[in-house]
Image (cartoon, rainbow, N blue to C red; front, side, top):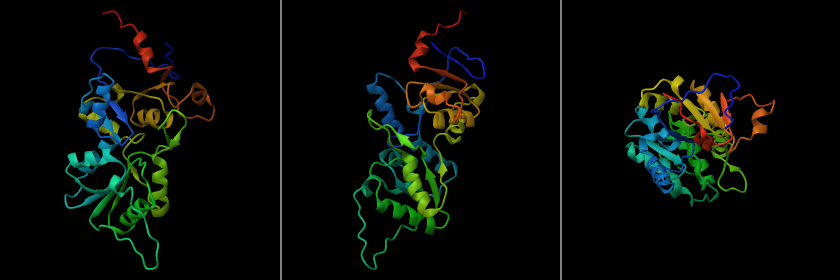
Length: 267
């Protein structure tokens, strides 16, 4: 196994480590991810899964989002399910995917004045209706928050090519509102802070493992953790070693399964 660290800071092994799964994909809830793990033969509890859909709901709860306010969702089912579990009113989401705009003289869209936040995640049914509705809420509803689950430039929907990611949806709303969103997913530190508090663990004891430099590794670095890059996904060795790349992990390995070859130290 190749386990190399540019800063040679040592890689600790031990017993009783806690494994937590963190994803920027907001299309599923924690419960839905739990079922996906089951199909892979893995037993993972909801408490060990931190999806950006959950992060959005958790953030709103952390700021005591008013009970009489609503969230307009530009995104998919995962966000709706997590908002439901948090007891937060919402509208939009997949049901707005088929809505069209009839641009005729005098036509004017009206938005719900009780929308106090727009939560935007990756949305395969993104359309002009959603752009305009979200824009009206952010620009015209006093104090309306603009929250993004992530700003990933690309995502991997098929194995044939890269596809436009959540960042493309963020860009559309940013362009019409001139408002920067609060990002709750990677590489923002919100989820890292939440994980550290939830499990009562020091961030210096955490090692973030991932395959993307600009989200996974930067997420770990922003959170004050050790980082391990695996080269089996988005980032290749040539990308890592490119002189233009400024994000360097503490360690890197060819693939996560390389850990199976590591022998536990003698006690």
